[in-house]
Amino acid sequence: MEVQDHAYTSTTYDIINPVEFTYKMSSKETEYFVKLRISNNFLFSGKRNTSMWAWRAILKHMGLQHKMTYSQASKKWENMKKRYKELKSPPDGVKVFPKSWPHFTLMDDAMEGRLEGKAPILKAFSNDKDNSDFLPISKLKKRRVFTVTSSPTTLVAGGSEIEVSLNGNREVGKETLQDGSLEIGRIMQEVEDERNMMDSERQVMEREKWVMERERLVLERERMVLDREVAALDRDRALVERERAMIEKEKAAMERERAMVEKDRDNLSRDRLALEREKTRLGRLSASKERLEEITKDSDIVDRKERFLNLFEKLIETF
Image (cartoon, rainbow, N blue to C red; front, top):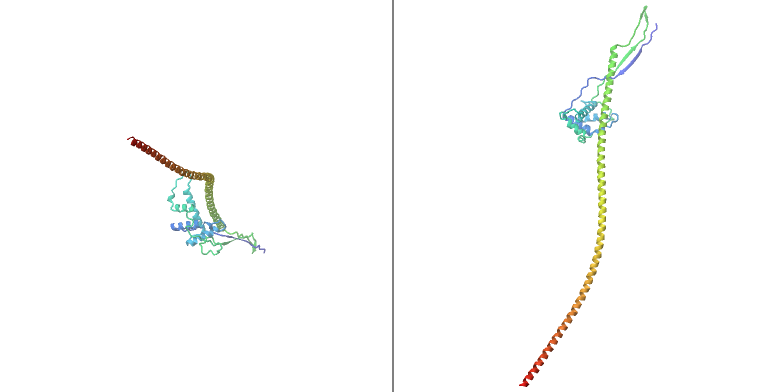
């Protein structure tokens, strides 16, 4: 009897649970969640697994590590940003009511950078290999599926031929395809989450770049204004220098005029002294003349007296 060994093939699959429950945060938890995400934006550097550890640090700080997974937290954040963008910048012709969403003001403050520093700065421990402190992402248990194939074997027993074919049943093949589809869907969802996160970070970088560009333009305008003010100051300085030179010239002219005035004053003083001396001399001359006139007058009186006496004597002699 000739017997051929069977050929066995084993394949391992990770099967996930299609039903996944998400914890619903309260309004205060949502507000704190957003503040933590904005204040710890530096943790989301885009490197491998940094997003996972950053979200885990936020969930652990909030005490929600046993209620939500990091992927659920990331999805919630992306959904909030998407809702905010739809209400903030709706398509043309679409009328929206931002106030109808209770978190619009919160997200507006977050996107405009007004919530930075409103929550503690966290530290992500990416070297921590212990995942028991976090809610695990549900996966299908690994199971080993054996597909047993056998070529037709002729077993001769008591003159009978039996043909045996072991190929597994159809249900196992269908379950395998379903499990593979779920695994692919999970991977695609993770890739989509990472892509959304990278898009959001790119938008943040674009917004920061736009803000920096606007600040650069403002600085350029301020520098132009400063240059104009410096040029105006230079012109004013040159004008002041010219006025100072003119003042120096006028000061020199005034000094020359003062010297001339002093010289004229000295001349006037000498002339005054000469006049005083002349006045004194003239005074003396005037006094001498007056005395002479008095003497002359006295001599005339004497002459008249003498004539009178002579006439009187003649008159006496006559009588």
